[in-house]
Image 1 (spheres, protein in one colour):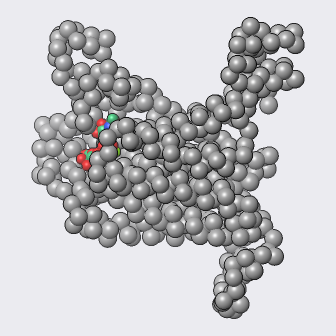
Image 2 (spheres, rainbow, N blue to C red; image 1 turned 90 degrees about the horizontal axis):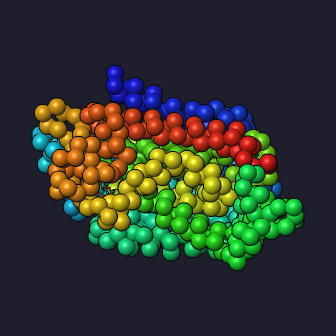
Image 3 (spheres, helix red, strand yellow; image 1 turned 45 degrees about the vertical axis):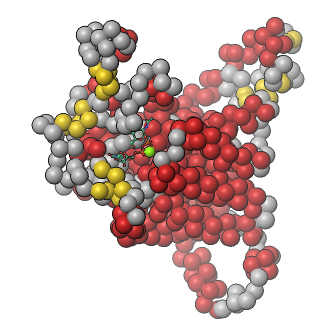
Length: 459
Ligand code: UD1
Ligand code: MG
């Protein structure tokens, strides 16, 4: 009963995007029939790709989406069936971990295969390469962005897998995503300007002249005086911001983790939200239609492979996805945000991760002790999860304590915060509550993006 309820819950985040997608797709029967007929005819044998697709017009968006959807479904089936097979290979090589949320139970010492994110990651890359073959042959200009996306995601998948095997120190984890984002930044051809909120423009310009603050800002950025301070070109600073976005996305998912299904669940919900945003923009035929089709091309197989592994990572997890998956998913989001030119909207979908990061900073920057694992503690007697803690002196960290005499303080993560506010609960329910919060935040982001943005920006 609980499992079928979980399946129903899992489809909920995808539902709005799925409805919109069905509306946008072209009639699949004649299109797929045409493709099968072409393959069956054998006319393609021995013909170089550029000749084969050279004279072909760019297919309509509905047909492109149909092709990406078919690939995604194949990716879902492949991931779902390969994970149970590949987990024996990682176990055999000793790439495994103990489920810390089951301490004191009969399965506490069971070795759970780790780093299984390599399966969805690799299948996603295969899907993306096939998309690239299709889309880049009819539009060679796409090759550059497709290749840079592939390079960045591939690099992070490699870094994540090597981290699972070698346990990199934190300084590498911060530095390497910056390098991985360079291919994206090099081929970024979008605007580096931001629109200033209506309420703040008076601080930059008044009566057609720059204010003192505006003049000061001009040392670092370009204030567009013709637009009356409405537009500020950040130039290089914008590229630095996008580099930092990659570092944030990759690490934010990794530190908001530790209970079964949370890494994959949050990525799945964010992926669905991004796809919905893309489809809304595609349907509205927005000015950046191409960018949103590109992003949907990446998001469809991503959601599919994530759904494929979520089933195995869900409570009680039979596999761990490892840093391999966290880095791969974080970088995929950064790629679509940067190359799809919606990096600010992307950040709106990361509200729980931003709160978790801000709340974690005292521990991350060692103002407060940070144990190796901050995931919640399993209480054997009650069978429920409780906030995990670190020991301290009675006089220390009073600002963090509920009672001044406490000799331990709860680790500063949103997962523990949730348990502190709502009380102890089972690992399964904790994950559902946190994912529910993610869905709520994504819903709120759509409200902010499509309703409240007009109050702040006039376009
Ligand atoms: C990050 C977090 C750490 C958290 C860990 C869990 C920071 C600074 N680091 O570290 O606090 O404990 O992720 O992913 O916030 N595990 C489970 N159940 C799960 C998932 C993981 O018990 O559902 C345990 C397993 O023992 C697994 C290990 O976590 O082997 C993986 O930890 P790892 O990804 O190496 O930790 P970090 O990413 O370094
Ligand atoms: Mg991790």
